[in-house]
Length: 186
Image (cartoon, rainbow, N blue to C red; front, side, top):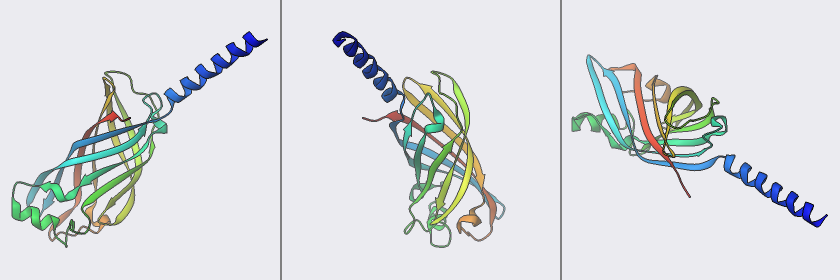
């Protein structure tokens, strides 16, 4: 009887260890990037934003369990023209002195599993906050597992007026692309 309890305890321990491995783990990304394209009057303005970060709880075998957030430092916006950058970051448009970041909080990721070397197309749903205004959004996401790291990218459009971003002469559509690589954290 003692031997069978020992085996049962060992089996239970192995099962619990397997469950712990399958549970979402913390992942983080630093030094990601964002791109944007936006029409102001007749000029198509393109730019970049460096320093995108992400913090997520991720299980590559069960993406539906993923939760987390992505932060885009709007104060790092660059269009190649300093005066235009300062106007975009100013009070009328993004007001980065008061609201330096845009944040996406992930509430739901469509299911599936990441397999080494394969790209999975999924949809991330959550809340996007720009300039203290929060709205629900769903965006397409591509994720690729490579050597334990997850490469993530998305491209989507939104209306800046929905977030109280009102630059004179600007259009009602901004195309945004975001890329970063997640690595497991201890």
